[in-house]
Length: 226
Image: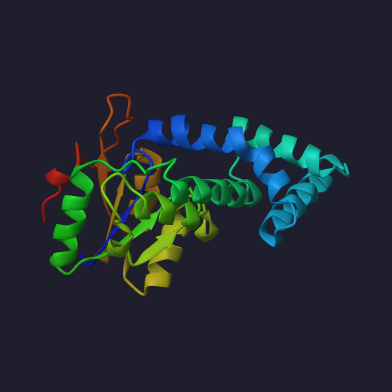
């Protein structure tokens, strides 16, 4: 094994942090942020993409305000739309920079990352959250800046996390045989897909409601031994 690829939510970071801190933070500030920054090119691109989706899916031309309403609806329905992910990232970036948010990371994680890095392993992240969101969680984490430990970050641009080709794509991008990669996640279906692509797998069971598959299981990173 040469490479450890880790999920974020439920693996390095509590699910509650994402759903009870990050999502509400973006939701509460979305309209104000867009209004305040409506002349920024990145915000304009978010609105453009949102309006294009409304046109394609509902055959409707919508205003900026209606685009914000649609983005809020996507937060409610947990839609993984690129425009929403990008806007959430911009809002979170402001929150992290001001100190209003600290990225939650379990205390066993930095200890393990340090040990794995010192052992010569390369580390990467694969999450349904955007690469930008991954950067922010680890750079502004409760355990300090952990971002330097990671050499690569992947999101759903490489494919969805429950689909086998996504893991093949990552292995190809890393120029590694899939068998040289260990994937860590709490989600059985993600681990199933990674294993089918040829990767090694370990399931994190940090909460009692995790659906356990037939992968090796651990309670936290300290139980992962090589």
